[in-house]
Amino acid sequence: MDVRECIYTRRSVRKFLDQHVEWDKVGEILEAGRVAPSAGNLQNWKFIVVLEKDTRKKIADVCLQQYWMTDAPVHIIICSEPIKGKRFYGVRGERLYSVQNCAAAAENMLLMAHSLGLGGCWIGAFDEDGLSSTLGIIEEVRPQIVLTIGYTNVKPLMPTRYKLENVVFLEKYGNRMKDAAATMGLHYAKIQRGIGKTKDILDKVNKKVFRRE
Image (cartoon, rainbow, N blue to C red):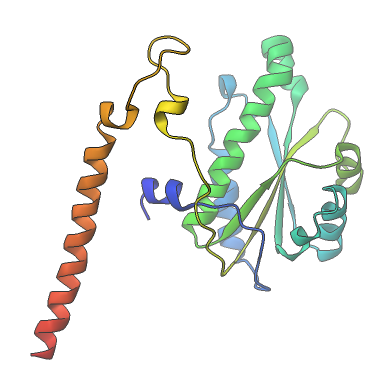
């Protein structure tokens, strides 16, 4: 799976199979988070891996009773160290960069999980004090994101997305492009990818035909 396919096919998954996730795959997911970009290379994050079912139930409870989370065999809680951000970048480092850094790590982890054949979901709705208490998180550290990871047999469709021209401005805010995709050559890229996929399909069909003959 190349990067483009991984990005375009990743989905938020909320249904998981009762299947163990290999520890080496958990390690690869954590490594993907570890190498994420961060402001000034602060890396002011900590990752908590939760496997115990009873603890996962408690996490689901403090995540506004989202009990579907319990079925995910792996929970990864991404925490920030805002004091470290403040030390180097003041209030902006404390309140913004620390959150952004954790978000970058989370997306890396979700993409890696997807590339390994696993499903995942990003949860940001939780009682922070309750989650900190459940996991023994010290006062100087703040939980930012809970990731649920596991095997799944569901393939959610891509939700509706805005077109590029609705979200892209050129040179200054509000200066829209009439057809951003065409301007940036994305239509041509899609056509070329479509041609490539068609060629692969035809090659497979031809091979089957020749084998029969």
